[in-house]
Length: 372
Image (tube, rainbow, N blue to C red; front, side):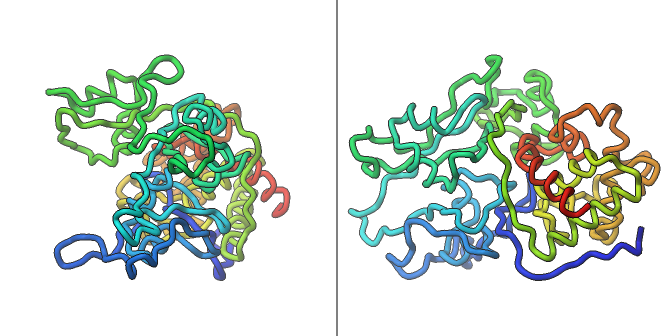
C-alpha cells in the first residue's frame, strides 16, 4: 500500500472551507481586534465572480472582510465549496455614501421541503435573480439550515420589497420538529439533544460548541436534522492534477482492499466533500488530510492522518483498519452496502451536515468509471 504514489500540484478548486465544522483562517485584524479596514472607499464591488484558485477566506482578505461575514452574506457554511464562475455578494460593496447604502442583506433559512422556486414565490422575487444572488443554478441543491440571500428590494421590477433582516425559518419542518431551539434557564446541551432526539456530537458540532459548553438563556441553537432533498443533477467538477492523483489513490486502495465499487464511490464522495480531494494540512480544530480526520478522535497522529494512503485505508476500515477498535471505517459499518451513499459516508464521518455528501454521488461514480 505504501508504494502507491499521489500525484500532487497545479491549481486547486475554489472552496469555502475544508469540511463541515472546519474553520477558515480569519481575516487580518488591527491592533484593537477589529477586522482589517476595507480597501479604498467605494472600491468594493457589490459582488465578485469566483476565479480558479479562489477561496472564501482569500476573497474576504482581498476586500478587507471577515470570512464569517462573507459566508453569512451568501448563505454559505464553513463546509460549503465554491467554484469558478460562481458569484458572491460582498457585504458593504458599492457603498461610497451613507445615502447610497443598500438595505441590510435579507436571508431565508432553508428548512426541509424548501425549493428555490418556492422561496422565490414566498418573497415575491424573481427566481433567476434569487439563484444569481446565491451563485446557484436551476439544478443546484439546497439543504436545511442553509441561508439563502434574497435579492435587494428594488432589484426586481414589480416585485414586493424583500424583508431587510434575517428571515426566520418557519417554526416547524417535516414532522413538526423545530429546526432551531431557544435555550431556557437550566438547559444543557445534553438535555436539549436528548429532548430533541438528535445526536449530541452533531448538535454540538452544528452550533460550534465545545465538549463542555455553557449555554445562556435566550441563546438560539440550530437543530441538525437529516432531510430528504431531491437530487436533480450532480455537481460537475473537473479534476485538477492534485485532485486526480488523490482520486486515483482512493480507487487503487479500494481495489487493493477488495472494496466493492459502491464503497469506492462512497469514499470518493466523502473526500470530495471533506477536502475537495486535497490532502489539506489544516481544518477545523485538529482535522487534517483527505478525509479531515482528527488525531484527537483516534484517527492517528497528525503525521499519520496526513499520510493519504493511511487515511484512506482508515476510511475504508475492515481487516486493514490501522486503528482497530478505535475508529470505525466503512467496512466496519454493519449493512453499509444497503445504505445510501450519503448515509454510508455519514456513518464514518459523523458530519454535522450529512446531506452534503449526496451531491457528489453521480460525480464520484463518473470518476470511478474514468479512473478504473
